[in-house]
Length: 123
Image (cartoon, rainbow, N blue to C red; front, side):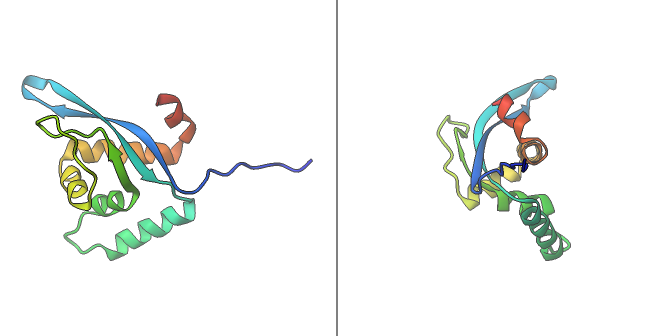
């Protein structure tokens, strides 16, 4: 009997991200929102990483380039006034400039690449 493989569909996937924003005296504030990542095959990921590394100038941020290429949307991200932050390249760059957000988004992206079943179970 032939082995049947089920391949993940192309496109994108959405997942919840929790960011712990540092506050005074060791406390943190939880910020939760949904992010949409571009779904990549291994060959697409390798090509993106190679392009990101070779195309980056010495002073450019490789994480910024990689995450900017794979994050294609979000929902539920709020500003300080509680208003929704629309997804745009400019807003994405601003979010990725905040270290705790960048770290949470990077970890969630790689978590989805490593183990999609675990990502689905958590959400």
